Length: 199
Picture 1 (cartoon, rainbow, N blue to C red):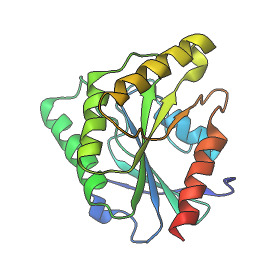
Picture 2: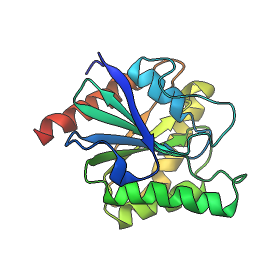
Picture 3: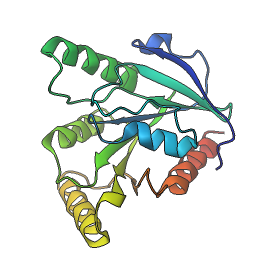
Picture 4: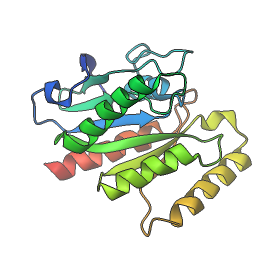
């Protein structure tokens, strides 16, 4: 798939106010500072489409981008940003969970994981929650360019082994670098494959 058109449509905090269409939605989520905005900009080929920030935890809304006039890329708030107060963290948790569980157009959730880190409890808990709720998802390892090739492979192998402790069948996973555009085609082809199956 090539992206010929990408436009910002709307932001809000309520899944019921999201665009009233039957287009499939592919949502991107991850812990604060995992490189989500950079990945979205790389995928769409639009440098400033999603706002990148040096300050983690900037995305506080559900952001809808219409891609090729026939599917949505959805930028969800990051989770696990400790500097937010308890009340704000709870609000964001509700925004995320209600969208994921009740938005019927949500076709696949892409969970971003920083490839430089060992498996984090907060991510593993989130993956477990997705499994318990039967949410279709794939894992996207980010920042692959920040590691030597061998170290990258080792980190991903460790992660996959950790997942195998709980999962009989592993979710699909992709290795990406926004900097080097690694994994872009694989991710877009995966989305295109699902779109074709939906038809």
